[in-house]
Image (tube, rainbow, N blue to C red):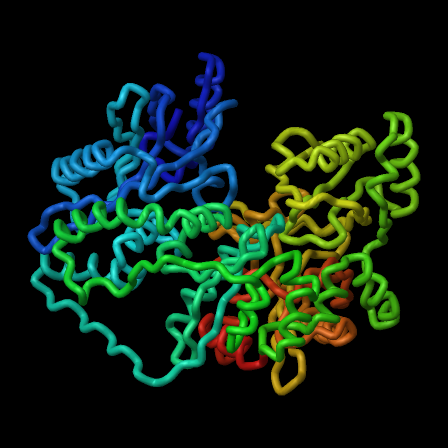
Length: 615
């Protein structure tokens, strides 16, 4: 069931009964998503998508299709979350694992459809290779998505086109049609740039966000006049891979690692497929700037030895707990962010709370906490959970409780618990080392809860802080006062060896906690920078900034950071949630907003250059 004119799999549902179909149709109509619903059979086969470009003779040329590998059981589909948030729930293969004949058929039929619909310049067609071998095109997109690693850029990179190359190719196509002289290409800078090795990936629950952050830093720095960025992946076995342009655009650590390991094997087949597309597109050497190379891994120690500068884009694990920072300090290799001691302290949420306990007189607090060893729950009965829950809520002075890993981030494993049954259910998933808690298992759960990748030994229980109810409905801010507290995130940037707080951002959480999507996925979370007057007093914002600087100095933070807190809208008092010494730097990360709110505005490339220079 899908809206007739919708996109991005929004309000698209798989149903198995007439009643379910009727309810979904009713939902699409009542939410005013569309006035018509399309009913289609659920496909049995393999899903793909293919990008088309128009060559200089106005002929359509299909690039290499991408195959989507995912589990369709239990009514799952390639939905909005799987499309736009890096996850192991879907794996991309480009080129696909189809035979060369099937690939040629997809390309030929896609080119026919491009012509049939009178499409121009570029397009993306989605479809299925059915189990009987037939090809079914299910969705025609005259404008492809253009996020940093969208299919347009992923497939174009496989034939040697960078982001700039493919966009210039499309613009030139449109200019030819309108008889307009294309804009001249910018001259290549001949000044020598300092090499910066951008390291991302790893083996933590935050590894896919790390890929988003690291690739975004790498792509933004390609515009820098000072630095020459090189992308590197840390895989699950602590090996470091230099990445060709095309490999860096895949979504997950596992996909990129697989591409690196099979690059040599796939080289001959890929060259045959590429040659066919190059000839049809009539590409010249001036049209594409990226060449494929066979990556060779090195140890982390050797990578550090060979690096003039390391930009740490790793989240969680060795990238944030001080391990990597210590190795870099030992080798005298400069890097971004705080040193090993501060990183180790800030990674441990319980230790962070203890370090800040002395600041209560300054109006800086932390939520009440209880540290628990996982082993103590191993033999618990239902009655034991009830007793523990009663003691826990009394100790934290909170009817509901936040549970989180002590030393993980990006909302991994963070949940709000309402009862002893919720606690028991949560711990069952932890003991099973589940990758995620599916929707519907916990009370008032608002989405999938991604769980830490490694085995946990400790958990942190925290008092749930009740805030004012802030919502955005139909582009209007609806504010319902309750306690005078709001959730904020505040970036810091070092200037002349002094940490300075940037403008705070009000975070509007749709559910009980700020989800992975809300933090890092564009178009999902709502952040308002700075918090809006008259609801939040400017004097309170100023006071909060001074307090956050005190927090950062107390924790020994250097360079830059992001601190999450609850803030009193009248006094600027703070309840600190956590300090992030390696903040996320995905395209949607709020720290960019805060830098842009500075006067004069600090644009993303300048912001990254400052971080590097400080290091």
